[in-house]
Every structure is written in C-alpha cells, then in structure tokens.
Length: 487
Ligand code: C2E
Ligand code: CA
Ligand code: CA
Image (tube, rainbow, N blue to C red; front, side, top):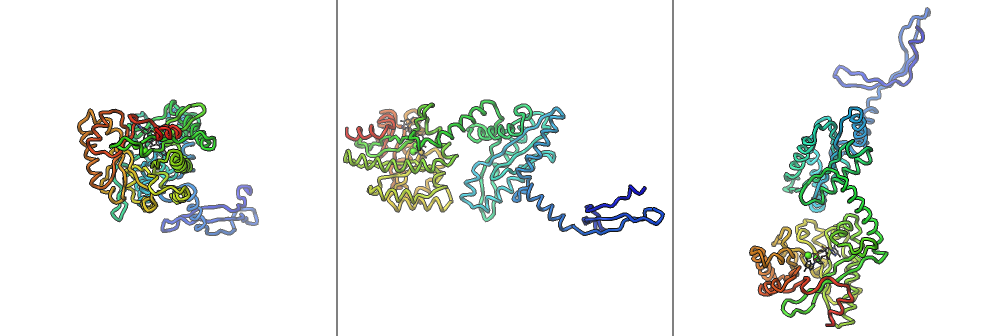
C-alpha cells in the first residue's frame, strides 16, 4: 500500500483549461499519509512551464522544418525515410523515392532577385503538395531541391501519374508580385526500395543519379534509376576529379580555328577552342568536359587561362608573322554569373595589344538576362575595347530587340542553319534573313560550320562577312596556325 504512493520529481503534465487551451506543468510531490498509514494525497510544488514548452516546440520546428516552405527539412526527411524503409521491409512491400530539382530557378533568382525566388519556392512547394497523400513525405532538401517518399505506392503507374502531375504543375507560370512572372520546370529522379537499393545511402545516391540523368536528357523530364546511370555517374565523378588537375598537369591546350574574310579568303580571325589531352581517355571533347567544368566551378579558372592563352598567342603571332589576328573567346553564363571581368581587362591592358584584338562569344540567352550584373559586364567589355559576338545564333530565343541594346559586333550563324541551307529552303531563307537583318543593325555576320563549296558560294552571295568551318580548317594548335598565317 505504502509502496504505490511514491514521491515523484519533475513530472511534466498537460492540463486543458476551460478554454480548451493546454497548460503545461512541472510537478514534484511527496505522498502524505494519515497517522494510521492511510494515503491522503500529495503535497508538493507545480510550476507552469507552458512558455518553455512552446519554445521547445518552436526549436523542434526550426530543427526539423524548413522555415521558408514549412516542409520537413533534410533531417526530418531522413528520419521519415528510414522509418518508412523499415516498415516496408517488415511488410514486404516497397517504396519510391523521388528527387525533384527545379530547372531555371537559378535564373529567376539571379534576374528577379532572391525575394521573388523565395515566393516561387513557397508556391512550388504548395503545388507539389497538392499531388501527394498525407502518408507521403514531401520535404525540401535545400535550395531548389525537393524530395518525396512514396511508401506503398502500389504499382509504378501510380508513380508515373504523380510525377506527370507535379511536372505539369511546375510548368505553369508563377506570379511573383509586382508584375514579375517566373517560368521554371522540374526534373525528377526516381529510385525504388528495396528493388534497387539496400541501404538509405544507396537509395539517396540512386535517386540523385536518376535526377541528374533527367536534367540532362532532351527527351524526358523524369527518369527511373538504372544500373547504367550508376556507371555514368561514376565516370562523371572520375572525369571531374581528373579535370581538377588538368590545368596544373598541362593537359589542357587551346586550339585555334581560322575564320576567313568571305571576300578575300584571307585568315583574319580565329576562335579559341579548348582541348583536353586526357592521359587515359585521349582527347576529350569540350562538349563533354565544359559542362563538368561549369558544374564544378572549374570553368572560372580554366576560362581565365584560355583568355590569357589567347592574348599570349595573338602577341606571339604578331611578332612572328607581322599579322594581327583577332581571337574570339567563349564565355559561358556561369562565368558571367560568378566572376567579373576586371582581371581580364587588367591582363588585356598588360598585354599591350591594340583595341579589338579580342571578342567574347556569348549565347543569345544571356542577352535576355535581367541581371544588372551581366548587363554591366557587357558594357564594361565594350568600353574597354573588347568586342561582343553572339554564338550559335538562331538556336535560342533570337531576341532581335536585344541585339541593339547591347551594341553587338558579330552574329555567328549556327552551323545547323549553314549545313541545312543547301538542302532545306527554309534554312536558306532564314540564313539570308539573318544576314540582311544583322547588316541593318550594323552587325557583321560569321557563318559557322562551313564544310562545302556550295555552302560557301550561297553565303557569299548573301553578303555574309566571315566564314569558319572545316572547308577552311579544323581547330589546330597554335604552331600550326602560325604556319597558316605565313602561307
Ligand atoms: P562552339 O562555340 O559552337 O564552337 C564551334 C564548334 O564547332 C567547335 O567544336 C568546332 O570544332 C566545331 N566546328 C567548327 N567547324 C566545323 C565544321 O565545319 N563542321 C562541324 N561539324 N563542326 C565544326 P568544339 O571545339 O568541339 O567545341 C564545342 C563547344 O565547346 C564550343 O561550341 C563551345 O561552346 C565549347 N567550348 C570550347 N572551348 C571553350 C572555352 O574555352 N570556354 C567555353 N566556355 N566553352 C568552350
Ligand atoms: Ca563559340
Ligand atoms: Ca558556335
């Protein structure tokens, strides 16, 4: 009897008051007994700890939920995923893990500002949430990455439906206030447990690899994990690691492709094109490694080096041949976003080369950027004697009104037009129209990928100013280029 009524210390209990509001108390008590040993009750202290409890709840929320979208964060996501994995193992069922990455979100952030970017993320979270059940976990993993855990998804047809709905929802325009509208899309990677992974690490990795594949696919916005993806991912990581050392190990080289004056056939310009001599893989195409360099940020150092190589070679050729060749250097949007060109300009000054020795090639889409940072960089180039070329013209937005705003010097007509020109009449008409329009705007034209005499003759008849392509020469090492100049 006596034993049942023990003292208690620091017991936390919740009591609802008349308004239905729960107050929390911290209580300690000692039993009191009558002289003959009958239990009378407890005597002790209690303290209202409701405020502390609320604070704890908030801390919990901070620790486990994303403050922007109020979705579970990476930590809670992992906890839930682990629990779900245990449960489906017990029940002999399966679950699907979906990684969702927003495409072009970075552009919205960079061009419209972070506040608008935040609004878009909140709205995107709400749109995705509409398509998942309460028993599913939707989490924000960080940045523009979301994840969904679908336990007991039934058949894969159900996953496909959710995926399609989510992708469609994300493609609708986002009203961001103040008349700003954001356009994004999503890429989704899917991995199944336990079919394709037996640990949480594997499952996460596979969903990520599938997402990467979806992001880089032209045909599909979503992808299920496959074994070959795993190999490709391993390959990519290996290449990325090798690329980190390529510059210091002197494996990179800049080749130059001659650009000729259409009227005289004389070499007057060249395009600097990167080459990677990989010790095992041999020559790796820039189409393969430039995207890796952009992803890893290595493009910044590599791009600076290409620019210096261009300057060095222009000076060298001038000294050895007496000819001044203008070199064009490709600069990708990543380079514009993450570095400024002031050190390029300093190096340019130091080289002592005359104005207009360099042109920078950018893609059309950069002209559409609303970022002041990027606009200022174009203007800075122009003010400091560096010319501006629009690369691959005709493949992107072809926003003609922007050409004027930026005082563009050259349009490079994309090789896809040039090569279809002699067989496809609309490509032919377009090529002619581009040249006429460019000339009206005082912009010179360079045709890329000229491979045949027939192409050259048509381009010449349209008044195209310069030509570049295998008909004249492939990209070649600097020494060889110098020999060409002497010929
Ligand atoms: P791009 O700027 O469009 O460069 C022209 C590409 O067309 C080069 O491919 C060139 O070799 C190829 N080409 C030239 N003439 C012909 C032709 O007659 N027929 C055909 N079929 N192709 C021709 P490459 O050298 O493989 O470079 C691929 C891309 O890699 C470049 O496309 C450029 O976007 C990028 N890239 C190369 N070097 C750099 C660099 O230093 N920095 C950056 N950011 N990108 C670079
Ligand atoms: Ca180019
Ligand atoms: Ca090009």
